[in-house]
Length: 451
Ligand code: SF4
Image 1: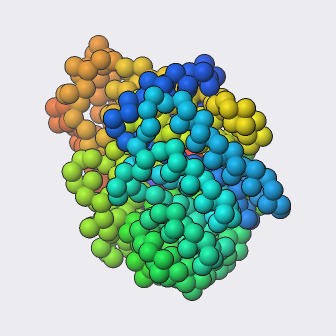
Image 2 (image 1 turned 90 degrees about the vertical axis):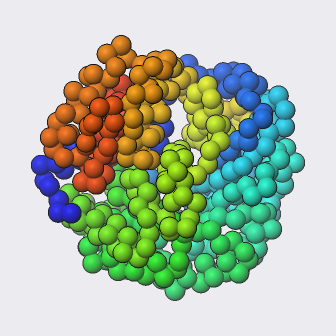
């Protein structure tokens, strides 16, 4: 699909990625550690929950990084962090009414594999002491392939880890040098062989477009090489240049960044190439093998979206642990203090480190569900929402009026109560969701461009 510069100008602007609704910039200090304690105590225990553990350390900084992480040159702070993370599992388990079952666990970061095998095992042992993992639970870890060892792979396997994800971004060495992340195809292949030998065979890989010196040819060649590694899923992200928020991004030469048209061509080339290799396109930026559970959830309309992006996880509660970690409970969202020191101090005092959050109103829930269906399915039927608590009096008339221009532009079909985002509109899905976002007008937060 050729780029339509008018559409790009109109809908390619700064909009949230909608990994939650309302989005994190709208969290506020009215939700505190005390609120979180009440919410946890009221958590229904019959359904399994998900856990997210954040490890905000990396061996080296990649210049494109948009995560909450830091590089430390001694291991002590990481060890202390691991101890506190294990203890946060105690603080959570003590606050809930009954022992919780866990169906999904995700270690993210940063690079969770900066932890030593011993520290990683201590955390996993504590989690198993305090929670019951369901049969077939998905236990996922983001790894750094550049530092992965056979010993660590063995530890992960012994701890029951069954899914790993990591970034490739682009295999062109010039691009890799410009982003300070040099990682050859051969090394990447060897790491995957080691992990698979230890029985960890569910694999997600991340690719990026819009990187310095990157071309369409680089992006296509990277896809061709990456599919040889036979991952189940790919996530494809456009590099978001926000040096005012992430100061290390100042190391990226802005003059070497591709422009909007080139970014568009790269993203289309990556998508087309992945599809030609048999991957199914999922939502905005994921691709899954046709036999992968994510593709099946897409077909059955059960795909969900959480802070990690698209997920098959059906749990109603996601408990976040670690500095800056965000949790999603039936009552609303909570976020831990981003400062490692503040987070650790609270946890070591047997307290929660929640600094902000948001209690969901019925209007928020309704709009969250509409946005989630749009992000996942590219379509939504408004009819069942019009009778739900929190629906606007005008039955979404103002939203529909705002969609009319998108219909004229060919990115949305409207028929009765049914909204369908067209294939041409897929890249602008965030802008379609933004029509239902009543917080956006308040102007909090600065977002990256949609494409
Ligand atoms: S390894 Fe990941 S989290 Fe760490 S600096 Fe690189 S991109 Fe960021």
